Image (cartoon, rainbow, N blue to C red; front, side, top):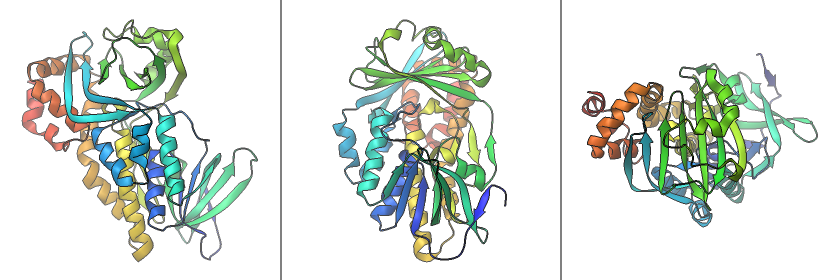
Length: 398
């Protein structure tokens, strides 16, 4: 089997090895360790570390953080995050509409949030090793039986055996590529993100500004800092080199950011719109961006990672206890996320069609209750099917 290693028989030292200590991996490790599993959590980076991200936790994420326990929600609150009460969507002409949540969402730097989750996983009993990259999967009798790792400092490789391997290693997941084919679908976009202090007119709203081409997302993350993301078609990625000049192309963003007030350098990520055909197999499964990621416009990435971790942990614990097939996780993901995937895809295509966005924003200005519905659906406050009802979709474009 190409790109794999085989090992001898015998009992593995670990019940589960988790590749990637971002929100998906750390939350999975936390839940498994708390249930008594022997868990090894690996990450190629050393914490705290920055990640290019909208850094927005949808309102429903708060409930997941509370269910995680281990002081996670309390630590997030103590980190003094921003509180967002809704989202503003601005068309290329500058016309904008606001949709409100029924409650509020948190927003805070990924360097802080990810470290909170990583530490909580360790406190729950997971062993954490930083600066360790997963390079290959180990197979035994056709089943994943562990990973081959490389230490970033020493360069030493090691074979780590486990009953289950979790791929939570992001957009370019090694585990996903070894498990099966990874698909990419249009529209292809990349994102450039930065932190800027003292931005003008930033309040308790997240903002999405659609342009020609691409879009800008921004919102407060606490301590007077705004996270700002410039998302561009892949063939226009060179524009990201002129980050602040590009921001000024958008009527609702122009002049609000002072380049001298940047407090975290511009980071890039993408292209998006990727998904794995096989999110679960014999001895392994994928969670978070390693499983799928379509477009950051709706800001559902962190919620999907956390909720996916709950589904993954439930399937793994069942498998460890009874030998149940891990593919039950794939079925659970379909039940949980199909509506979200469809809504993300529709919105992802729409933001590349400026005339359509102008039309939709115009409709929402006249029907503010629909703006609230859409924002609550993308914020996971209500089921995605509420926004996908034929009558709602017709109201937006007809």
